[in-house]
Image (cartoon, rainbow, N blue to C red; front, side):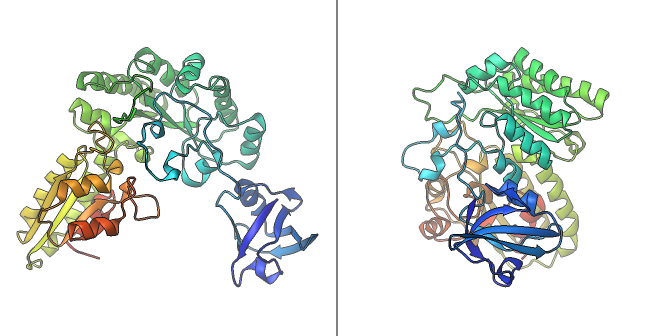
Length: 437
């Protein structure tokens, strides 16, 4: 049963007399406990909604489109509390957060429902056989799974959870049900790399096509690792060996299955000082949210915009100066593309600033973990022009707040410049710097 906090005006629920404060009990006789139950059992043209109203259970009948909503709102998107993580992963980024951040940044979620709603990766350790039964019954897919290793004993040690090895059997059940999975391996030097990585790739490839893609990403190591498991970053040579292993096995998969399945994150290429593969390599970018092919996609999108703006040459005559703040990893590419644009539009000046991540430590080079504090400290006193662009993915989802707690407004006031959020999209990048709406 779930408390109804609001009913949308004019909705089907309002028309049948459901009001805020009622409790949703069941849909078509099926008990409702969370958003998965709600969405699944609501997907009918005729639904019988049982609600507890003024101490009495009443039934309301609603005719609607098969996948149409009925207008109920609840206290949380999950219609339940988030399931917190029960693991103690040796590479957990949240454990490496400094003190003094907002409370929500210390919450570790491992909730399968968030995997379906927002694409979060889950470890399966929070799940039971009945949870898997429900997923199979409801046909929820894809399921994003943080595997890390298929060695049961090693998985227990890495995640400090006695169930971490046992729940790998759920992969068999999900594949047998023909549900799609996307995998993730956070690679820790000397732990799950080398022969263990090869073992994991061989084991996971057996689930293809249901394990459709797997991203291999390096563990993010901040400067706040006191008393944590001693992990060190990959050297350029070691990163190169990781790429070679993934590419070699990926080629075998490509020959055998028609897909590489396994992809190294862009960070490995940057660490190894190797060029990012061409677009065809990424097979439609199934793991772009994991930082796999993000730089190549950006350049391809830039190329599309480049073709579209050719007819604007000579029309942008008024001087325009903008500044771009970016992380160390993407700085060379952003600088190169900016120089190309300035040659095409002589009245345009683009100042690209590489922001060192002093907040988390210089080993963190991605733009998505930049803080307002570091951007401010790097840019204060500089001439920033008409606008300053900051990476949108460095802000909390749906809010204008950096991880450090600084807001966009505070940064704008501190630097005395208009600030615009910049998406990780090469086409939009061109439009933004040219001042197009």
